[in-house]
Image (cartoon, rainbow, N blue to C red; front, side, top):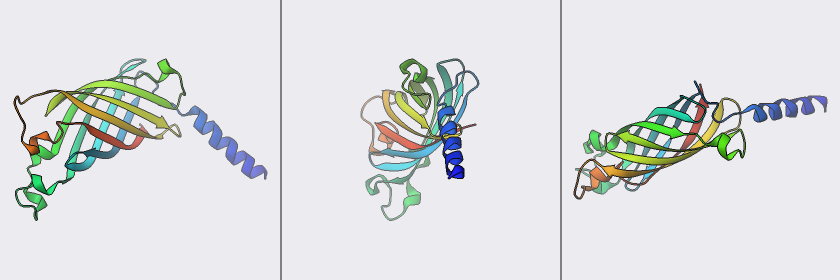
Length: 171
């Protein structure tokens, strides 16, 4: 019984000390799924804290699976164009976890991003279970597309509403 109580106390203290964003010099790495219309893939991002509520970073998504209609040959996935499947973004976040003050484990961060496909905005949230591991989700929308006029279906990839969801790590 004493071992069980000790184990619960250690786990509880670990959860209490988890902090979603600690400010200056904070390092976060995230890996997860990127979900959008006509495709799904992987998302990687890194954020670095510049101040109490400001971070900058880089994010990249690569679509592993796209709708058959977007391929040259629906039977051959390798014919899909690489430049339509990948996006790379520089991002700026306003980390509001300590402003909304719900929990030290939660960070909500709206932000802007400048990528290969567009200038966009995002709204994300991280929740840390321990000091090193948590989960995240982000909603991304394009604010200004680089190509004017109507986009082809493959050009719409990464130029539409996207959802990222996955794991977040403190470095």
